[in-house]
Figure 1 (cartoon, rainbow, N blue to C red):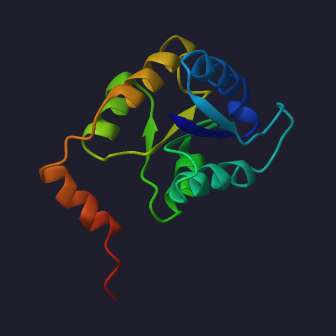
Figure 2 (figure 1 turned 45 degrees about the vertical axis):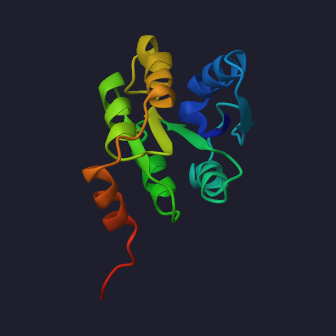
Figure 3 (figure 1 turned 60 degrees about the horizontal axis):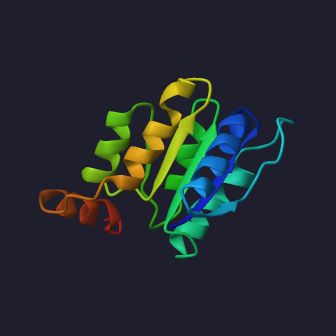
Amino acid sequence: MRIAIGSDHAGYLYKTVLVAWLREQGHDVMDLGTDSTAAVDYPLFIRPVALAVARGEAERGIVLGGSGNGEAIVANRVPGVRCALTWSVESARLGRQHNNANVISIGERLTDRAILIPIVETWLATPFEGGRHQRRIDEIDAPPSA
């Protein structure tokens, strides 16, 4: 699977862990930065991940920051992206099953290192359930009515 990944300085360490692990698992990883813990503005590194997913250049995307909140907000501003803020294996599973999340956001400062890989592993392996959830995805994606 082709996976785009990006972080700000506060998510950089977890990003490096995930890039290595994803490649070990045989995934094609698009690392869109940042490349250090030097302070940066997160939208500059998160928006390219979301755009890569929206354009079909990547099947999935992972964005990381300190809390993951701002990163999820940026990603969700891109049409066609459904970014779930994940902090546990269960939140990752439900993000896929119920919301068909094609991007996840993880907060390095709020997520225990021991569950980082299990979160991503679960999200990658969980299928979208469809059914009643598809109706809701269609409602999310519908153009707003004045």
